[in-house]
Amino acid sequence: MAISAQNLHRLSNPKPNSSLRSSLFLTLVVFLSLTAGTLFLVPFRNPASTASAFSFSSATTISPDRYFLNLRFPHRRVLAVKSDPLRNRIDQIRKQAADHGSLSSSYASYARKLKLENSKQLRLFAEISRNFSLLISDHRHLLDPSNPIDETSLRRFERDVKDRIRTARTLIADAKESFDNQLKIQKLKDTIFAVNEQLTKAKKQGAFSSLIAAKSIPRSLHCLAMRLMEERISHFDRYADPESPPPALENPRLYHYAIFSDNVLAASVVLNSAVKNAKEPSKHVFHVVTDRMNLGAMQVMFKLKDYAGAHIEVRAFEDYKFLNSSYVPVLRQLESANLQRFYFENKLENATKDTTNMKFRNPKYLSMLNHLRFYLPEMYPKLHRILFLDDDVVVQKDLTALWKIDMDGKVNGAVETCFGSFHRYAQYMNFSHPLIKEKFDPKACGWAYGMNFFDLDAWRKEKCTEQYHYWQNLNENRTLWKLGTLPPGLITFYSTTKPLDKSWHVLGLGYNPSISMEEIQNAAVVHFNGNMKPWLDIGMNQFKPLWSKYVDFDNDFIQLCNFGA
Image (tube, rainbow, N blue to C red):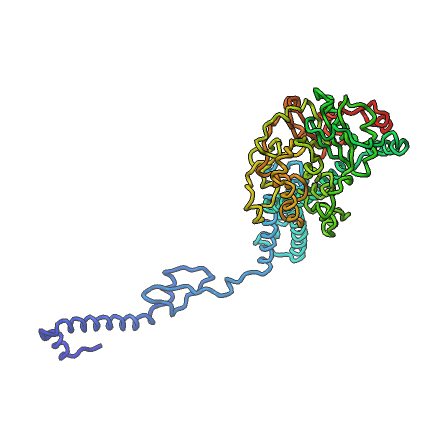
């Protein structure tokens, strides 16, 4: 490129105010001159001399147009990066075999950790893992990339791998329960749920069976009642009541007892034990009330021997004419179809719907014998005080000291049964009902029926029978309490009960085997409350002698009915 003399003159003699622009222009001119010279010289270089300066492999080619400032770049062929599809297939099969072999080995190791050395699963997993290793080892020639691929060997290898994978997966699926903790937990939960369902069902059926065993009449007891009744019919005049009752039956200065029962043997034990432990039996009067069906048997039983001068009255509750459905709420409610269906449906599933309160479905709670205790002032209008005894108690001491207790104007003398949170009013009544919640304290202490000393004068003053009728009528639909006589008793005598010393009345011999013998020996009265009555086969053997020693085994009728001593 030629530069004119005029331009050179201008470059060498710049104007003072254009020096920077002239420097930039000179730099650009020099750069363009060097670039043009390089491009002009490159095509005329010798390719051979250039090739001798560098050496490349045969797989690389150098184009003569790739030179730039004495540098060159290789050009790779496209086919050189293509892979063999059979080789990829072999690699995938080998990887699957190796993965399943490792998985089987892991299960085997975990089985050893769980101390399952002798289990079949451990042996199978170890064998599967070895099979995968042997299979890969046997086909090493096929897996070697330097060896040609035989498609027949490849298909056989693939088939063997698939068979072993199928076997491994089947074994893993079968053994998953033994190794999967979450599955174990879920299975355990399912098992616990199923067992609880079975337990609940068994408890219901057991409670129902226990109820039947406790409330059914034993053959020997039925035999005794029938033989006594036969004796009553055969010798009617011998056991007839006197035309006028003895004056002692209404003498308020004597010690009067009320026993309401349809069990002739149990009633006789109560009377025998009370008379035997009384200091002056002739001053004791026993009022035995039963139903019409058992009246004859009771009359015979208590006239077969002399009770050391004690006075005994035997009557049927039907003889008290004021006890009718127009006056007694229980008798009126018994005529209700709903109540009859509740008690007398003969279906196991209905009887066991409410296991906790199943005992209250017992029709005995509708028996008038159970509710007579609320009519004592009307049954014995000339008496001032009376001792009520259940037919499942045994008297162990003289009880006349009860008549000397100052009742402080209270109606009912009873032993309290509460301790801690147990046997409080809240356990007997429905405190979600507004009327119950308003009138009673849920923490009030409960007491027991079985031995209760009643001041009949205070009873009449407090009008307790009227109170009982009021609450019994409100509870016709069983919304205030479950059935039975204790809840209405707790309500009727809520503020009129005097607590007695616990030694007067020890309870629980029909359900609690842990009662101490010292406590029993110090008790004036022991009570076999619960299902395990002493006259039943299910009675507790350690307590039976306390009751059986008052059974009159010398009685001919008792001997005929095979009562064991």
